Image (cartoon, rainbow, N blue to C red; front, side):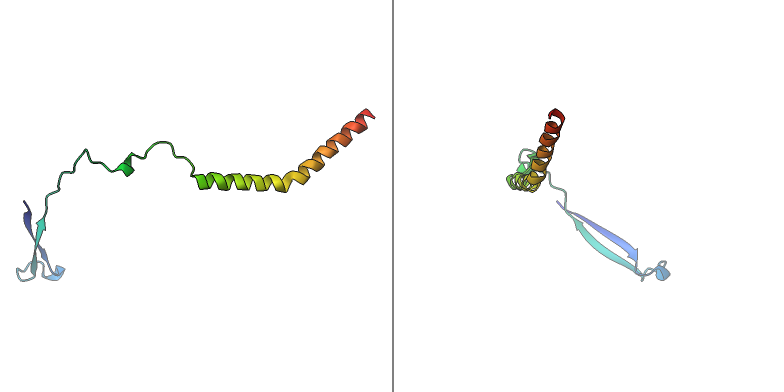
Amino acid sequence: MSLNVIFTYPISPEFSNTARAMKQVKVTLEPIRRRNPVATSPLLKKGGVHEKSMSALRQGSKSALSQQLENWEDELEFERSLKRAKLKREG
């Protein structure tokens, strides 16, 4: 079942009070169909805690490893300086 509606509106504001300047538009409105509440989209059920993808985890571990490899010389030098300071205090 559809609903036919006729709208009338003035073509121009200066001729708004004359009958010739009015335009009629016929619009057919379709009723809104009721959707099946049982058949919901599976994409809408993907709520909950979001987890990182495997590629994001892999990229994170690669960047952490590269940072550790960049800083290993500094850490080694720091440990050596601590050992030297300890030997000076004892000796």
